[in-house]
Amino acid sequence: MTSPDALVRVATAAGVTTLTLDSPHNRNALSTSLMTQLLAGLAAAVADDAVRVVVLDHTGPVFCSGADLKETAAAYASGTMPAGILGDVLAAVWECPKPVVARVAGPARAGGLGLIAAADLAVCAEEATFAFTEVRIGVIPAVISATVLPRLHPRAAAELYLTGDTFDGRRAAEVGLVTAAVPAADLDAAVARFCDSLVRGAPGALAGAKQLLRRPVAADLRAEIAELAAVSTGYFLSAEGREGVLAFREKRDASWVPAR
Image (cartoon, helix red, strand yellow):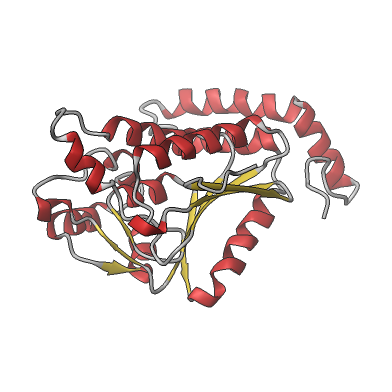
């Protein structure tokens, strides 16, 4: 059960665990405490076989303002910045074997953009705003580039990284930062539609599909095809593969689809 003073709220229903950033007093800034709790929530979701999808949500008008600058200023004395744990969070979201969906109802900056990019799918309100403002305070978006740059179109990345200009949800969808931008009133329904689709996938197959999406471009196409053919055969012969084919033939839901 989530404690009353938690910075990340956890709720699970119908195979979907929602991790809600709940630190509105500092615009859901990525403090060490919040990131530690987020890592714990992700780990628990991964370990729970009943959880099929993870949703990243937020309270308050801001999705995430990035690093906790108060904590960062205090860290100057020690000379140690909290970038390491941010890297751990981004890696945990990116590598999560279960689909991760970001629900973005409001602005995101800096590390918040890295979190959105790390998710497999991201849906934002058209009115939400985004900006890579790092150069305007004398730094660069280094750590978040690990997840952001694979999403952004190269020309857009150059423009947005170098200018620091603010852009809206529609532009975020155009350049690849988010999957879809919808009117704010439609945001919950859009997230629910994605979750409903995702829970219909077999857990092992979803994890395998995520691995495919992370594969680098092959230098030897024929060798790549041969390797992928062996992977495909393994999935067809697996318990999930056999059940999925049988369920399709019998015109019923597969055993892994959560009951409604």
